[in-house]
Image 1: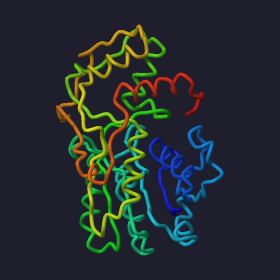
Image 2 (image 1 turned 120 degrees about the horizontal axis):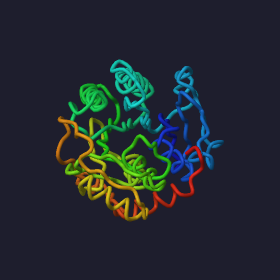
Image 3 (image 1 turned 45 degrees about the vertical axis):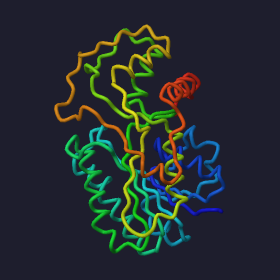
Image 4 (image 1 turned 30 degrees about the vertical axis):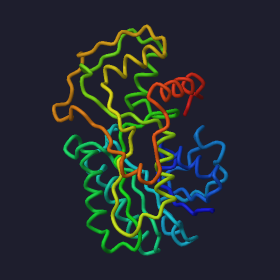
Amino acid sequence: MKINILLTGCTGFLGGHLARFWVQKGHHLTALSSTCRRTPLLEPVYHEIEWVSYEKMNQAFTSRSYDALVHCAGSYGRKGETEADLVDVNVRLGLKLLAEANKRCIGKFINAGSALPKLTSAYALSKAQFAEWMAFLSPRYKGALVYTRLQHMYGPCDDETKFVTGILRKMLKNAPSIALTRGDQERDFIFIDDVVSAFDTLLLHDLGVGFHEFDIGSGEAVSIRSLAEMIKNLCGSRSELRFGAIQARSNEPDCLKADISALAKLGWHCSAALEEGLRKTITAEQARPVEC
């Protein structure tokens, strides 16, 4: 069955992988985007996507009807954005989209959220605030409102400001030394293909009217130290890992791990073990274009 999807964040890591997957499955995809940038990730499907700028948002909603709106656009605050900028992108934009989706009777609204505790960072707080808005507005919404708590995604074509991609690229270049925290904190890392399959599962299932929350992760936690050492071994890198050279943030939780039981009830499971996902990422990284 062909599904009409309105997607934000199409030129980003998650949005790009979702766009490519859904177009290749034969769905119709409209991308609401601030830029129509051609990325290597989107190159195979670029001309099959209907692109609409945010300035013409109304056109996106009036040009056709949609089965689902998937909201992946967001700001991490890593490029000098203010707290007000984060609220504009992570909260206010979402509220505008939610209002339009309800007005147009779009049956499903899926938001890419965060598993971080809300007081960890301004980014985490803004994501949690939008989740609260979704729950608050759900009695008025005519369809399903789905908030996903995403653990640490990794995979080909991610930004080097992300931990896995950043450290992996340094190791492939045999950087003399890499400064890290002690690495005792444990995190849940999930390969991007499994994240895409989780979103596809949420898209296809009838969840019923109301507010729904789903953790998306592998369901397993690994220490940052173990992860860094695994990446070094897989890369065959000569880089020195300087554990303890950086102070960990005081408000960071010791352990984050997804509870994937709700997704499992829908038939989803995580396919890629950590080492397998890292090997695929390293292979793609070694072959990647200059801009990815």
